[in-house]
Image 1 (cartoon, one colour):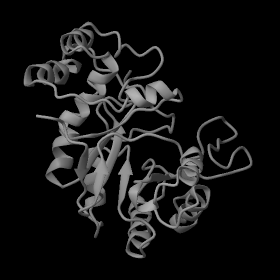
Image 2: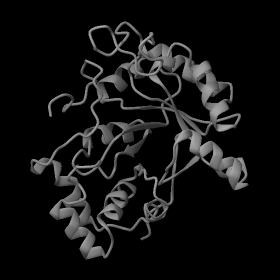
Image 3: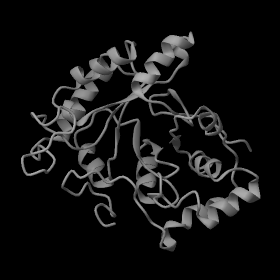
Image 4: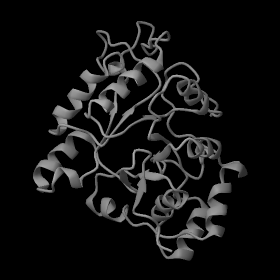
Length: 274
């Protein structure tokens, strides 16, 4: 059976199973392509310094993209950063620590996300980098269930419990860093290479296909045209292959690649433990 090309959000909208791109480049690409806006699915994120004013942060994104709505808008992290003279995007305190507002209530950010959704500025709203404890807390206040939770996912960080929780609540997972990063051992792992050899594809195709076969949207990134094209190849993986990939982390290979230094635990079991 061929793997799906799209998944259905809890809003009823269809989202591509494989996505790509960056904000300004996407905006220029849309303008140059001539493809009708309704045929393109655009996702963007609310940056941490814009959390007190979601509408303002959203408008900056819409202006950068040259569009009047987004298909999906995500809260980038459950952390509010306070801009200061050091930086408008990644502010730090005089002692070098990140300028974080520890008193900020994330449910207020979500309330404002619900407002721009109800106003039609975005077709769906969601979160990124939210663990089960943070989602449980948000659940007490939400009136709109997040459509998506975008997190780091790959065979060394499969986040099985988080996927089960999100599945139960109708929240679609999206995987970033699906191929690892430079120096990450995913592509050279013997088990992954063996599955690639057996299926006559690259390790990258195995890693991308792993997510789609799990029912997860996957977001591989590349600046090289040939890799952008090849990253869209998805194959069906056997149950045996999926069992191997799902079990790698439990064999001592668990590894998180992205752990920003916000200075506190965000509720993931492995946060700041590697």
